[in-house]
Each structure stands twice: as structure tokens, then as C-alpha cells.
Amino acid sequence: MPRRNVLALVVCLAAAFTTLLDQASLNAAIPALRESTGAGPATLQWIIAGYSLAFGLAMVPAGRLGDAHGRKWFFVGGMALFAVAGVVAATASEAWIVAVARLAQGAGAGIINPQVYGLIQDLFTGRDRAWALGAYSTVGGIAAVLGPLTGGLALGAFGDDLGWRVVLLMGVPFGLLTVPLAIKCLPGGRPDRARRTTLDLPGLALLGTVTLCLLLPFVLSGGQGLPVAAWPVIAVAALAALSWWERRYARSGRTPVLMPELVRSRGFALGTLTAMFQFGASLSANLVLVLYLQESLGWSALRAALPLIPGAIGFAAASSQSWRLVARFGRAGVVGALAGSVTAIAATIVVLHTVASPWLSLALICTQSVAGVTGGLVISPNQALTLAHAPAGAAGLAGAFLQVSQRISATLSMAAVTGIMVGSQNFTAALSICLTLMAASAVCAALDLRTRAAPAPATNPPVPAAEAR
Image (cartoon, rainbow, N blue to C red; front, side):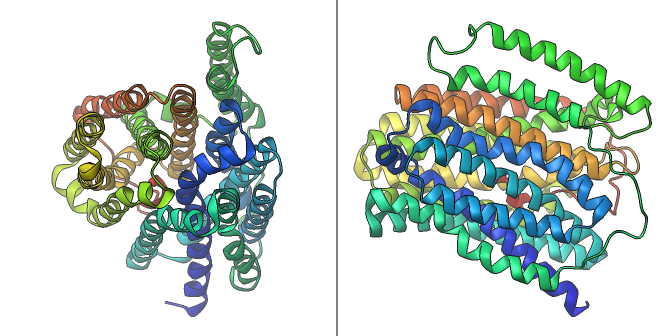
């Protein structure tokens, strides 16, 4: 393996660690940030959910631009944006500034993400590619373990008023170090084959409109904006316009955001829905648990983070072995793992209602360990089985859309549960939303049991499981 490829991979892993650590550590700081800045429910929802929204919407155009014009400088620009926005968020005097900075950080991460995947595909093949993707998953697992722990330690060491700022600054040193390394180590230049870049900006705008129309009812206070019933109507109209535009765009010979062949594929559609519901449920359930333990029970950030760590370790360990599951059981293995995830969320609700405080940490460690292991057994196998339905030459686009759909799901579900927890601290209602989403994921996976998949393209591997945490 050429040394320059190894150095490029190290830079990619550093970027992955930076963005994933930031995301994993923020949940622990949300109550302190809210108290310090006086953030209202709507602003807090934007701080939490806006990151995923900007991340998802930036991915497709960033991936296409990187494919057509080279990945190095988009990687550098995205990393620089992420670091600068982190400084702005950490030094903000108003909650709305934090929300805007988190949107910018999400966009930066969305620009970086497809360049990392593209570089791994460009520089590695065969066993080396599998090794590189395994290293990416390992880094994601480490970030998932360290995120809650470092967030809790920062708040314990610096106090709530300064601690949340330290948490938001954690990724900045890594980002500032990664930028010059990327300039030096990443391959430059454009691809050998020159091609015209088509971004489908109208399609992205309509997709963003649909998402915002579903998001705004959760983040607008009563009486603000349009009547609540108007938003779903606008969303349906925007979705119809998106469907019409994408068909028209595809007929012109260009590549739309929603490729018609993918939308019409039963296996791809069901696999995407499986991923959407599971991703949103998993991230939201972790958020609900941290908010409940800190704000309702008065636990410190570090104490609230500890029950999540075994789940993160279990996730990393299970994801590294998940290919054995899909090789032996196929889609049925995913269905079984999702049934375990449903059980874990239901058990968490029961535990929070019935277990007394001295034993609550131990009981939550058990439920979160199950949630982590089953989640690790779902992500990569489902992605592989879903991307197997992509037409020849479209697996990259299919993978990007799969991630975009997951980010949209996370945006909506996290906004919904944050509104419930901040407004009424009704953890049962919030976790019931997560339970419903996870059950819907299991149903979609079960419906796909009879769908026959085509062989997955060898040159387009599935997204590493690290993105799930």
C-alpha cells in the first residue's frame, strides 16, 4: 500500500473523528447551554436539529462537485468552515448565534463527508478498501465512546456556564490541525475525465422545502407563522412539485437528486425507509435519555453520560462483525436486530418508570448495551442490502440519497422529542415516538424480506457504520 495513501487515510480519519466527536459530545451539554443562554424551545430545536438538516442538504451537491472537480479543496473548505463555525458557536453571547453556527457546522460536515468516502474509494481497492472502511468505523466507535464522556468531564471541570463552550470548542483544535495536513497530504487535481457538473439545485430546494414544512410546526411557538394545518398541505404540494421536477430533470439526461429508478425500486425504497426510521429513532432516544436524566432527575452531565458508554462500545463491536450477520441471514438478520432495538427502547421506558435511583444506572447500562449492539447489527447490513438495488453506475448517488434521508429523519425526530422534553419533560411521550419509529423500521425491513436484490456493485461500498452514532 503506497505511503501517500496511508497518509491521506489518516487525514480522512482525523476529519471523521472531529465531526463525530462534536456530534457525540453535544447532547451532554444541551441542558447547560439552555440554562446559560436562555435558549427557548424553538432555538434549542434549531441548535440540535439544524446540524443534521444542513449536513444532509449539503451532501449531494458537495459530492457531485468533488466528483467533477477534485476532492481536496472541498475537503479543506468544509473542514475550515466546520472549525470556524465551532469557534463562533462556542463564543456566542446569544442562543440564536449558536443555532446559526451549528447550521454552518452541519454544512461543513456535509461538505467533508462525501469527500472522505470518495477518497477512500479513489485510493483503495479490494482488501485495502475494506481495511480503510474498517478503520473509519473504528474511529467512529471511538468518537461515540469518547463524546459523552468528554462532554461530561468538560462540564464537571469547568462548570455549566463555561463547560458547554468547551464542548463546542473540542473539535476546533482537531479541525485546525487537519486543514494543513489535508493541504499537504491529500491528492490534488481534477479527475482524469472532465465532465459537466449538474447539481439539481431546484430539486434540492424543493426537498429542503418539504423538510422545513415538516420541521416548522415543531419549532414555531403557538400563533407564529401559518396555521399548523397549512404546513402539511404545503409539504404535499412541494413533494408533488419535486416528483414532477425530478422526472423532467431525468428526461433531460441529467442526474436528479431523486433518481426515478431508485424511487421505483421496491427494495431500495423499503431499505431507505428502514434506514430513515432507525437512524431518527436511535439518535432521538439517546437525546431523550440525556435530557431526562439531567433535567428531570438532576444528574450531572458525566453521570448521565456513563450509561451510554457501554452502548457505544457495543455498537462499535457489533458493527465490526455485522457482515457475518448479513452473510448468513440476509434481510432476516436485519429484521431480528431491529426487533431487538424495539425491545431495548420499550425496556428503557419500563426501567425509567419502575427502577429506583440506586439501581437505575445499572438497569440503563443493560438497556443501552442492547440498543448499541442491535444498532450495530443493523446499519451496515441494511445499507449493503439497500444499495444492492441501485442501477449500474448509480450506487454513489444511491448512497448519498440514503444518507440525506437519514439526516432528514434525524432532523424531524430530534426536533419533535426536544419540543416534548423542553415543554413538558414527558419522557414517555418522547420515547414513544422513538419506539414507533423503530417499530416502523422493523416493519419496512420485514416487508422487504421477499424482495430479491441484485449483486451490490463492488466499486461502491456501503457507508461505514460509524455514521449512525
